[in-house]
Amino acid sequence: MQKWDELEKSSFLDANARQRAIGMTDKGSFTELLGPRDRFTSPHLPVLGTAVEFDDGMVTGVGRIGKHPVFVISMEGKFIGGAIGEVNGGKMVGTIRLAEKAAARIQKEHPDEYAARRPLVVISFETGGVRLHEANAGLLAHAEVMDAFQDCRHKLPIICVVGSKVGCFGGMGFVAAATDVIIMNEQGRIGLTGPEVIEQEMGKEEFDASNKALVYRTTGAKQKYIMGDCNYLVEDTIGSFYQAIADVADKPMAEIEKLRRIGSVKLVEEQMGLVKLVGDMQPKDAMDLWKYYGNEKPEELPELSTAEFLKVVKCRVRN
Amino acid sequence: MVAWVVQSTGEIQKLVIKEEISVALQTLNFEFQAETPETMTKEWSHLGVTGSGDLEVLMEKKNLGGKVQAKVVTPVKGFDEVWRRMLGKFVNDCQVGDVSIEINDDNATPIVVYMRLRQAWAESSEKEAE
Image (tube, rainbow over all chains, first blue to last red; front, side, top):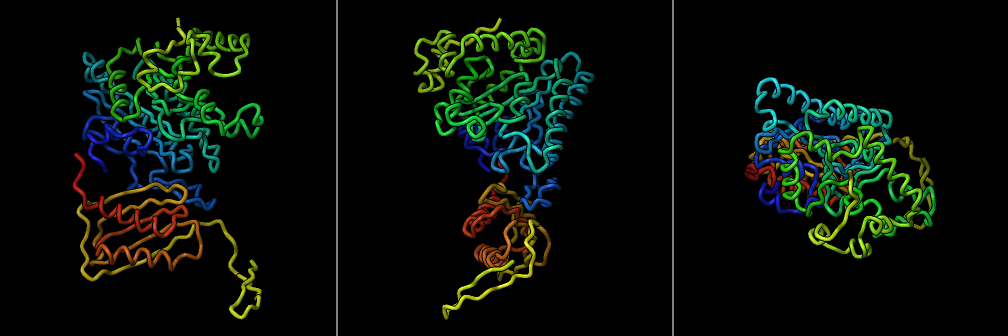
């Protein structure tokens, strides 16, 4: 394994789940829970003749950022596309519940210092959603995760991190939307139905999945940033993600609540306003919306580096 | 299952394979003994992902009287001998001893297997990351 300092400088996109987990917490602070040596593997895969993985494709554990305990969930996209089944789904729920317990304990033992010691949950999504081999258990895990999010609401922040090859699709796209804060690099993608599936079901005229530029400006981080779905757009290094997480860790909960996309009547109204806008406008491409929000030359935006993009971009203003 | 085999004489022979086709994973167990074995420095090491064409390796230090035990779980049938040779080559080349190796394989080629074993071995002797 690389040294922590090297990890911080290396690409988030190329990193595996374990490197990401270690790099998103303070140097030397990460302890893995239910790691490969515990051999918590899926009982369903061998029945179907599919190879298992010792950590079921998910790294879970706890580290620190300053005084804040950080509960990390990091998905490995190379194992069955990072899909969520019974065991890794259970690990995910368990980690969030553990963070919730830690928050309650810190609240009780250090009531004056809670803001400085408040725990956080960081989820590095790299998944296509439900693992079809164990679909019912996988779907149940999605529901349980959302339930756990709701219980953490106003107590501790849940941070979604997307910047790996597979992106975040399927049911986990919903789960990502239900978090408090979303951090992405330019290569990060979030969506519900994946590009290939849309093409297969609706035809190439509807969505050409081989057109990478189209895929990225529809599901990619720049589009999400303009629309207000992505709160932090960062450079592709693990260290940049660490910095953004550290920034959220010190924010008051009331301010974090403002970064949410769903979860209140007001936010639902805001989303319905977007639906109405798209209905009236009938955009043919994401770039039509970018133009609507004041970007005079939307076709230039995908070409810009992250730093240049952040300087010139005009985003949807939320009230 | 029925297979057709072309023999060296040019004759085509019908071969009936009694073994049923099953989707079950194969579990293979091996044991090796190197001449001058040395064990790993860490208690355990883990490397790789069970991705398509790849595998994960878990190595653990274990008192086996200098021997190496290997357990391979693979979805592919009929490659027992290739596994034995590849693992044997690794144990000999690196003079590994008192180590238990567990592999979850997803159709990795022999050279990938050998490379991952060498990587896991290198990591198992590395100093802990700060």
